[in-house]
Length: 97
Image (cartoon, rainbow, N blue to C red; front, top):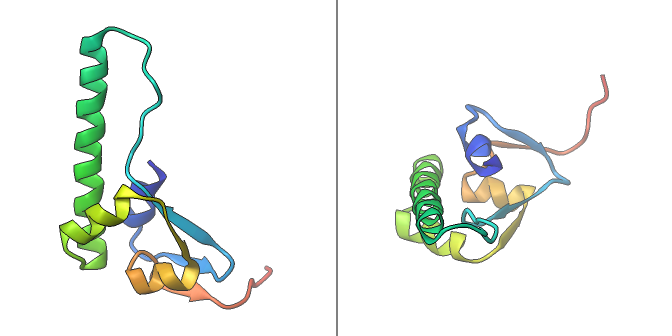
């Protein structure tokens, strides 16, 4: 869910020390009836489609690129996340208030 919240912000500024991981939604092993497992898998699939569309809209990248990147763990530095289109600004220093 953090993925979704991350890209829904209007303007996102990160410290240059932050890292982010792009990955598809996952579910823990479900110890229930088969029908419940199917419902959980369908919900995870809907969530993945929704997140993929939001990433594509936010980054300007095609859906297939976002989908491929979500298939495996993709770790990005703050600058790489900026180049990818997830982050708007990268702060060079922390400013204490």
